[in-house]
Image (cartoon, rainbow over all chains, first blue to last red; front, top):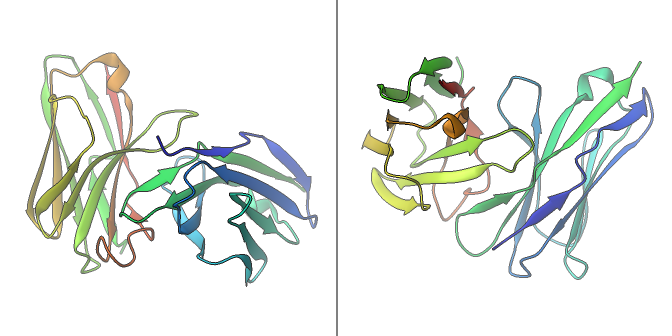
Length: 110
Length: 115
């Protein structure tokens, strides 16, 4: 059973701060990793993908991958109220299947 | 226009009813998926189709029956459901299964309540 674990939160951060979300995965064969954002009552939306160790930056978002530690993280810099959502971590191995975590709920306080 | 559209958005049905969920993608993708999302639980993959051929049937009860008449349309036929089947059912598409399989585009979901 491939498992992806996330802290459910809620993670509450003040506006302008950095939100740090963590994710671990059990399958060492996982090769691709994704972060999806899901607003309340809406569907998930892909915001970041990362395939190799290290950091990947896209605007205010930075994804970090450490395959040796089986650890993926997402940093949201200069957090805005519009970043309040549930963030889903997902991992994919050699096949097409994505394993999702249950999500971390982030609340940005104005 | 959203890339993946689902209807109906909300559905209430009794355990003896028969209903269908519909999904249509306008992205030219070759793979389509049904996921189940229950509160506080990870997304559960139910079915996967690639070029109209089913490639995954993830131990889903037979009261859920998928249909993929072409690469743009996907249905989920429902019959004799149980209250524990109440959930958000999400349709998604991707370019294919080999490339871009992790980059899913989701519809807005169909919120199902079984009484």
